[in-house]
Every structure is written in C-alpha cells, then in structure tokens.
Picture 1 (cartoon, rainbow, N blue to C red):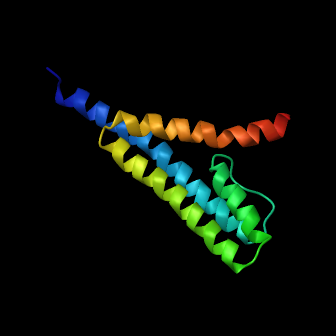
Picture 2 (spheres, helix red, strand yellow):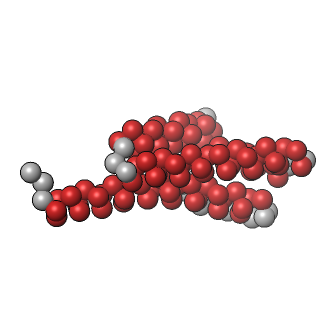
Picture 3 (tube, rainbow, N blue to C red):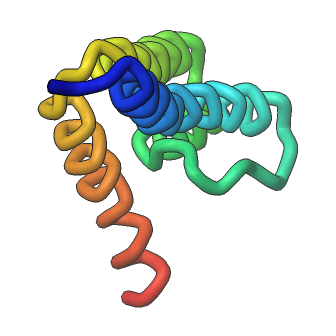
Length: 114
C-alpha cells in the first residue's frame, strides 16, 4: 500500500518530467519569434523542425510564411499535448516525446558532423 507521501513524490516527478515537454514547446516558439525578428542567436533545446520552417519562412513569401507558422504551432502544440498527458501519468507521452525529440535532432547532428 502506498502512502500519501509516496504518491506526492510520484506526482511531483510526473510534473517535473512533463515540464521538460512544455519547455521544448516554449523554446521552439521563442526561437521562431527570435528568428523571424532577424536575430542571429537562438535557444538550444527547441525543435529543429521549427527552426527549419522559420528559416525557410524568413527567406520566402507570405504563403510560405503561413505554412511555416502552422508547422511551428502544430509542433509546439504536439509537445504541449504530450506534456498534459505526461502530467496525467501516461508513460507513452514521455516515450513519444523523447523519440520525436531524438528523431528531430538527427538532421542537425548529421549536418554538424557531416
């Protein structure tokens, strides 16, 4: 039988893990705003897909910019949804978030070392 203290610790750990998913979503959106504003720096930890979409949008016309904005909002929304499910204790949300984050980083790793 679990005690109230153990349940409280488990809930705190769930929230702490879910906060990482929220942080990824937030950094991705902040990086989008930074890139569109013309700055040359960004936060490490955001999604690569939002960086790529923003870079293409900056160099393209209005139609492409709308598509890039939708891609960025979708990606951030996905991580927010995963964070909400993770806070409810769904392990699949953590695993899915980690897998997507790793797959998202592959193009940048191969670009850096290739």
